[in-house]
Length: 112
Image (cartoon, rainbow, N blue to C red; front, side):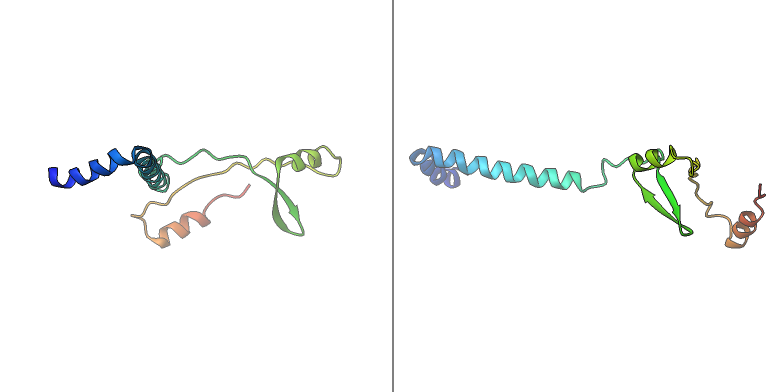
């Protein structure tokens, strides 16, 4: 071990500023590599789904078009438009059921 560190220590003694700069750059690059790996990993991802956020849409020519909240609020205040509040539903199907049972249960929803 001493034979490996001895030449490196000799260079550090002859060029201390360059050694400090070198290890600062290497440390910074390593820091950003670790930070990037953490940001793109799913280790810290929440297992709980995020709550639904409000969305604003406009029915134009029979199709829904997304609009921003400011535009929507100005449009709602006019007399020729009616606001409509929709509730988002999040559900998942039980994998134990067959697809035939799911299709029957979906089509048996009462209409209001």
